[in-house]
Length: 229
Image (cartoon, rainbow, N blue to C red; front, side):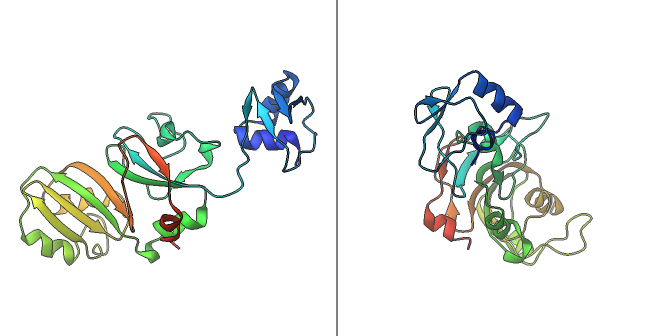
């Protein structure tokens, strides 16, 4: 592979910028300064930029993040900081969220650069379950368990929601398990029964359970990755 292509890919910059950095003698290959972008790299060679070794990205990557409030689940946004703020990985901008959370919703976000894998999580035909902890404004009643189980008619939707499992914790807190990903679905479901979601936290996707502090991330285990295959 050409050195300039390798650097552009792993640094996430244009080849024009790479050319300038090469001329500035910031790149070495096996300890030797290289100024030509046409230099042909072999897989065995070590590339350093500005004193830091660049680790080649050869495999797909899979992470979980405990998202705080105030961050959007996109790679770029003109108004709000994105979840990539928390991800200290090469080429983090190549990652995407496999199922987004709203700006004010916290909890489990799965990130990957594997489009087929994320499709198995987000595609409606796979019915991937998500578990949310919900805090509401009005007291919860037992009859809501039956209502959620049999589907709810959302505003401007043609069909009922799929059966959802509502586990009431106390008057104002519950766990809700859904297998769809409609727009603002949890908030709209509670709005349809004349209640308002005050706080919303996702704790689980499929069999993957959030187990890290807010604002932190970690790689998924192989078992967690395979659970969506």
